[in-house]
Length: 329
Image 1 (cartoon, helix red, strand yellow):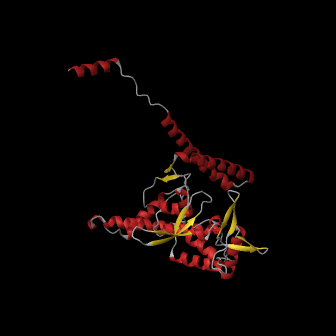
Image 2 (image 1 turned 90 degrees about the vertical axis):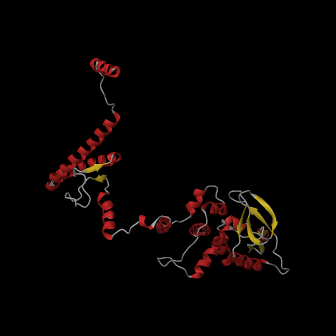
Image 3 (image 1 turned 45 degrees about the horizontal axis):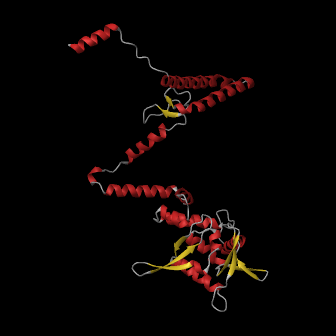
């Protein structure tokens, strides 16, 4: 197995069962309309029963060349080996497999456990460790995630990555791609810069440091767990952020279960304080309990107003006669 297997994983993103089925016949060539010959790696149907072709990069070509040179026999040919298809439960015809191994003096196609063992040995000999100093471990499928992530981050369209990875759903492909928040922010900033470049310069002006700080402070002061704060921007909280007691807290209707939980918790704390004789708690907690119950009542009244019909009244006969006469005139 050696280094060749994990480098093929890295440059193709194929599955472990795809690697087990690679043969000398998997390397084919395709002639473009201009006459150039492109080397391709043919992946046989396995998990999704979809045959696909992967372009062989120069790095991958170097790895495949080394693998073929290693498995050739004295006659210069790759020996034919029968293989067992795990999903179809059938034996395949003898093929020039690229990853054979010997067991009890018999050459067979490499097994999945042997691939994982060889990968662990390679990483152990490399001396690479994680942040805690332990040897770094990889699974064959980890290289598939690396391949998809690197491809998408370097500009490959996700739907093309989906075809290369043989995913039926593009959401599966995007699930493999580890798009970090920093990458998303940088991509969005680059998009904004390109869009601004298409507009006249006089439409934009630089934001001052004071304006930017004021903009950020709006989010810091207004973002509360139970809703929105009704105090003016730029003013300090005189209630020391005791939001349940604050009369200007604008509670969202969907926060009613949270308020009910706070109310029940306050009742339990008051009962505990009275039982233990904590006079300070007994004096302060009822104020918070009353405020929580008041806010729950406000939410219930608001919901009742939305659900109840509004009586607009019936016009009297005198009003109807007056309107008819006015219309006639």
